[in-house]
Length: 88
Image (cartoon, rainbow, N blue to C red):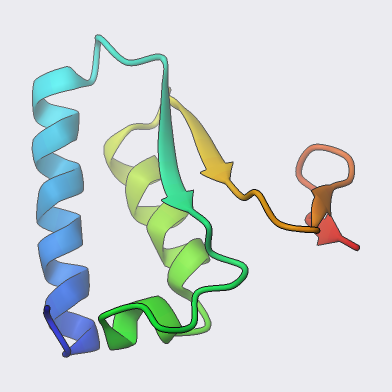
């Protein structure tokens, strides 16, 4: 596993770019993050960083400006109105 936060960001940005280059016109939506509310025990400092979700969506939006971006979260938290965040 990559332990350095910035090294992981660099690798993920590269991967998002590769996906976008290859599939940009073929994918109407993409899951950007998965199970991020309770992310303790992940193998990298990146997953513990407080801006991980925002950074991930920012980079995905930069590479895939017309793709619907999705967060997958199956915990006790629920989404309120679209774009308003999460609540208990």
